[in-house]
Amino acid sequence: MSAPSPYRIVDEPSPGALVRAVVSPLWPLFALLFAGAWVALPWFVLNAFALGSATRARETFLAAAGLAGSLALAALVLGLDARGAMPAGASDYVRMLVVAWHLLVGFGLYVLQARGFRVYTQLGGPARSGFWIVLLTTVVKARVLAGSPLWTLSLS
Image (cartoon, rainbow, N blue to C red):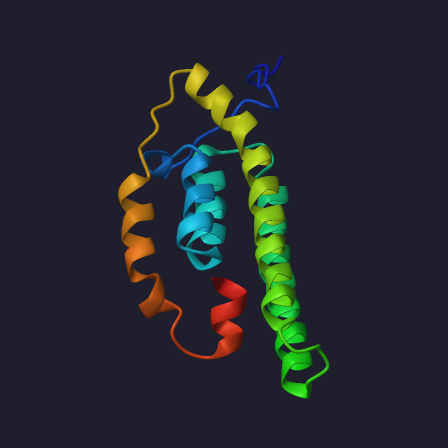
């Protein structure tokens, strides 16, 4: 008779080697709001793997789709603006589509990760604060995003 396989709850996080990097998903969401998608989307993915989230594949896909959608929206907005296809003064309002996209994706990632994080902390898992990362990336945001308008708009 073979030994029984260990019992595992599917929703229970199974933290890996990156367990020291686990933060509340609120910190990557704050990073999205203050520093931009360039830091928040990779941080959500890192946190998903560090947490051992049961939905980490979905979270990774959503972050990748968020980046792809952001680039596509930014290219569309900049293309319309370059061709003069928007009424005068509408450019800033249309650029808000990219911001709205970032917020939609960021909130979706937060919701997916929050449940696993709650279970992780209820089981006694330690979590770090992401305050200093949010502060540092907010300060260096202008330098990182300097460059092409596509880069700046899609990742800010």
